[in-house]
Image: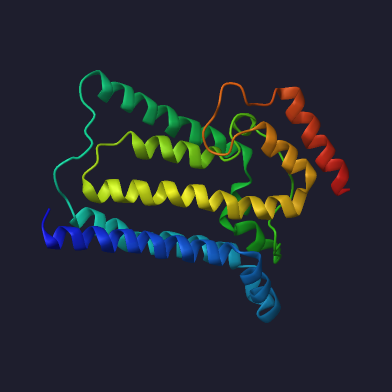
Length: 221
């Protein structure tokens, strides 16, 4: 690998690090509380702006990856190609199905904008969907499956490692907010269901999920 190629990989890794720090900082309760305090009128647009920044900030990194093309270091071939493709398609399908478990207008920020409202914690309710019975962060799980079932040159591999690390670290920050919102009930959920990778012996039945959800709803009233 040439010096220029090594430098390209360094900048890609650094870019993902900066992206992760920006994303987590803007999602923190401290920053949101500061915006709500200093610019309350703007706060109703916070989620929408946050998502827009996340998309726009990722574009230069994707451009760097595209420019740093090279030979594959990880290449799925033969039966492994079809297995990887099947897993990737299954994860993509699972992600699309999982959208039904979320209020997407709220997730994007459109509801807050139209209703002129904003919530620091953004935890309107605790619901355990089908996929949440097996993994606490199904979107991250599906993203990891899609990510690691692709052919990868060096820049893609660095990006996959960086994003995987961010998912692990990001879940910790996210779950601090969830524990603050739901307390012991969320801790019980954490004890029963793995964070990112499903395990055959750790999951909730439909009845158990409904019980935790009902207890959480009752406690919030």
